[in-house]
Length: 238
Image (cartoon, rainbow, N blue to C red):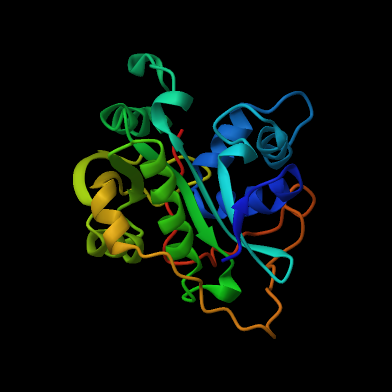
């Protein structure tokens, strides 16, 4: 199975996938954290290329096929990355997400999961999720958590089938990068149960097919986005 730790060279591709999978939250955070002269995507690429911070490439595992990254799972021990926050001082856009993350302290947090559109439905996302759950188990973390948009019904249905349970929800405030509203839903599952539900197996990828990239480097080409990720994408946390 071609799952490996991400490297700095993978940062542009991870950025692209996380941006598309994140329901607008990553782009919002990159925009508000941009330095002088940086575009949101340039700020995101800088953060993704660093070794510290929640968007760091060090939190990602990637699925490689024919020398191309076709899927990414960004996950971490929530307690090791998130500091306790003053929820009252958070802006409205992320307050609900922060409140939900506070409820998931002590868990292994799936921050983003996405696959290339040309290879969706082939098991890449499930393979990455199975790999991530085993990382949680190796760290002794007994629960896995994620936050999904109520508008992403296929993903919600998948997590229901895998044994994730509804824990809480918050209103998803509308902002320029995300205009559809809805709710953020926190879901939790027991690590042991997920290991049984997600056996390790390689994705069914044809040897002769060249993975298609929907558009060029995101920090250069900022054209209209096509939301063509796998149905298993998650809302990215804060």
